Image: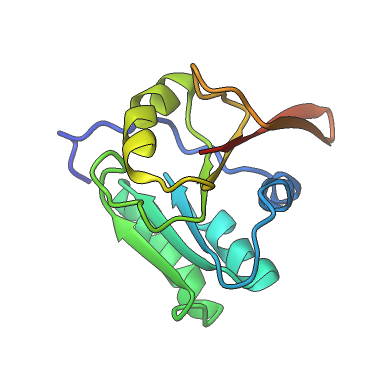
Length: 158
């Protein structure tokens, strides 16, 4: 890992029920392209490909997480549908996304906002787990209860 590039958020995996709800709220459709910014272990990408038939691109700074995600994707034979890019999400080209998923922090979302406003096409759906994008109005916010924890899913449409 290049320590000169600080992570925008810690690695905290989203529960699978929350991942499924995020993709459902986004109305992810077969053949669409999903970008997961800060993809961690790749769980959102894998579900997007396996259950929703989407192409999925993950961007992750942490080398260990990238290796872990690539191994899972290879083991599941999803290499033709899922790509992992090791790099900084603030520098990656996200313009081809139909859906963007985020589980960062509010401050990280705020740093990403100008990039998303510049690069994402009209109609792109952005789904954020728990953390809002400051200054944007969510099209919808849903609650998911996972055991005793409440998760919020915020959907934004560019």
